[in-house]
Length: 402
Image 1 (cartoon, helix red, strand yellow):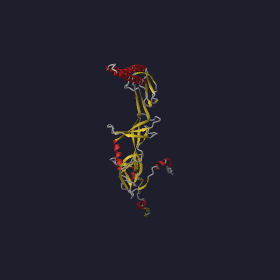
Image 2 (cartoon, rainbow, N blue to C red):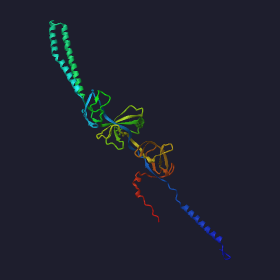
Image 3 (cartoon, rainbow, N blue to C red):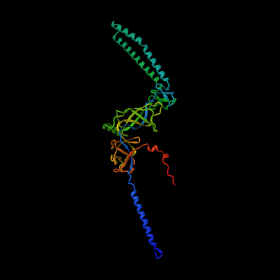
């Protein structure tokens, strides 16, 4: 506008400001009209399907020799020679030590001579008794003479039996000079050397033999686990007809599996008061000597079969502030629900659920942080191998800056 030849500047700027504000208001209205509605979060779910599962218990155990023989001398004497190599395998009946046999050989010769002397008097004493018996009928000898001859014969017979017993004892003691292995197995170090003086039935063993093939594994099972197993059987959640409970697997100290399965022999009936557990004895083959007495191992014992086990991924289970486990599910209307769970045990990367879930329910595995009970969600099937199958190198390239 021009007034008296000049432009009225305040009016000009007012018109421009009004036009600018009108444009901004129209743009804001257009954006509000074009904004999309809020999206429904997407969650990955697994559908509960009961399945047949063989339940096992992994229990600590310790190996022990199948047979143990502590070698002790039966007689007193001087060790002449050790006849085995320490740490080697020996056979039953193999000579291990030789004790000086000279005094025992002399005792055997003495007993043999005493027996021969007793036997030498027998013919004359027997003939005398026979003659006195005939003469006694004719009253040629007195009854006393006959009784004395008969007693002398019986004493001679007793001397012969005594001599035989002494000779047998001397022969046995002579045999004991050869200390032999009572069992086959691996022998340890020798506690005596050549020239050592040993005594009969001494407390210190000369050496120890242990049979290692087969070998025992003594497994400790707590009474709590026994009670839990008994309740599972009584409730019908577990049966022992569909699996061979006598077969036991073994895990070595480094976690590797042992080559052979073992056979469960028996379960002890006495509870150890210090540990509150009972002992299960398992027998394993050990042809290569991998298992040595005193090793700590873990035995995988079969408990039974759960015909309708409910398993869910461990990542699907959360815990409330009190530590109680729960899972989120998606119901038929697409709404999120919460289920409090009772967990039995972990099987691999899954939980065995004993209560809280029903077949065909959809359990949320991924996306739990994006929702809450009562919210509407979009459920898609959970793919356990999706993340592992998509390596980082296959990710889409970043957009180039212009």
